[in-house]
Image (cartoon, rainbow, N blue to C red):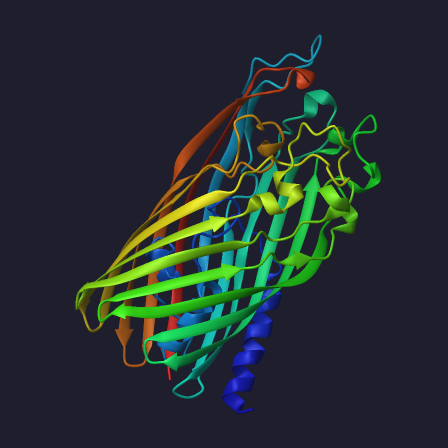
Length: 420
């Protein structure tokens, strides 16, 4: 192993440690809408259009098409989330009505790192380190205080992926890739012990305010990239469910005794070089939240929290459409823009528990660019997830009324890449 390779791998381990301590909230449910600052500037597209060292996170086949390089960057992420409850009456003097601001923790820094090396005309290897997704709410004013909940309320989920990848190019126009997703996640819940009252949880002592717990596991991502014509490229990728160990401190909260896997997901993409300077990209992705019971089980399950059929957030599978355009102004400057739309994961029938996880935003607009000088390049992006409000009826046993969840997001990112 060369000194350069040792230094690169050492830095990735350092960055993995840094990432594991940083919370995030993603945009497509709790998945990030793209990986890498350059992809984010294209609205998250990248299945058929690899751009930087984070390509392995989207489609591992792409690493064979970008040469030797490493990239390091960070995104500053600021979500605005909260809820309003009206018309609630659970008994004399007992009401959840009010405006609840979940922004006691406001800003998050999300680093990323990618390294790609061509091993010859047919093989390439890579390592990507990134935040796959997460969620965070922090309510200083507890929405369930009227029911007896104490202290602030909220959740924090952090998901780190370290993905070594390998690509094989049997033909100049066709590449196959595989990445191993080594996953590490952390979780904490606070201020929601009231939901475990009266035998509602199979393990009420492991439900809320148990500090931060962690879990590890692994999954697999496969990818393909093929040039259909001199100007049209097709990409396809599929990731298995990433199976993780259980959150033992929260075995009374999540279904299947604290199980919280990362859902399977898959997608296809096209990249079209409309002109030598102009490339258009489109991705279609599906995320199968229904494969994770802690996320997809309904709150209205008759089973106890923490059991096989225990209550959850009721989330549905989602379809994601991403569109992007890249324009090379000249050899030193490329400009980008993109749009991302996701179907609604949160049902209107499940508002009460989703105050903890109001991942309701659906439309995201992004712009970005890259400035090159010699072997180095600086890339930036800025994105905005448009404000979305989802309203639904609260169940009569919780006092009825209406809960309105809302969220908006802003992100800016900066990355440095070096081709060697």
